[in-house]
Image (tube, rainbow, N blue to C red; front, side, top):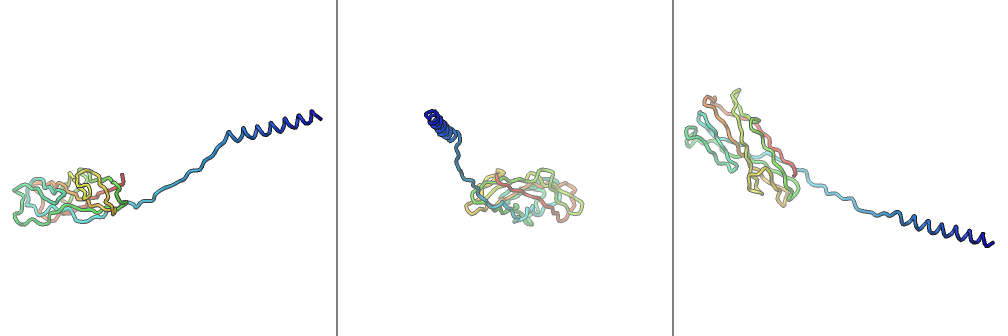
Amino acid sequence: MKTKLFNLVAIFMIAIFSNNLMAQTTASATNNAKCTIIAPIAITAGVDLEFGDIIKGAGDVIVATDGSRTIPAAMKSGAQLGTIAAATFSVAGEASYTYAITLPADGDVTITEGTDPMNVNTFTVSTATDGDADLDGTLNGSGADTISVGATLTVAADQATGDYTGTFSVTVAYN
């Protein structure tokens, strides 16, 4: 009887200690999974890039991001300036987020009148919120910004007279 009792107590003790050992080898915890959905970034074209009226001749005509124009004296059209303007784009997205700006590369943009092209190169940019010439911007507290774009138009000496047009793209993406 003593042996049976001793064996039962021994089995009971092994079972108790075994459960305690097993309970100490595992642990668990819970955590949260979170995300924030933000507004997609968008860009909309505004004012066109306008180099104005130019007298036939060779040279570069530059429109700065503030809309001012630099032109060789022999190509100035007197008081007949035509429309001169930097291009503008409106950017919208998540308030206070920063974004990168991609401008056309040199050699990618031409304007034409018929089959006579002119190159538009050296694109420049400024933003309303940052006020600098870097290729980045910051959306304001309402999630908006305005980009101004200037460029250089290269005119050949034998450029045909006429109205020249073309298109270019500006791309924005969150940093």
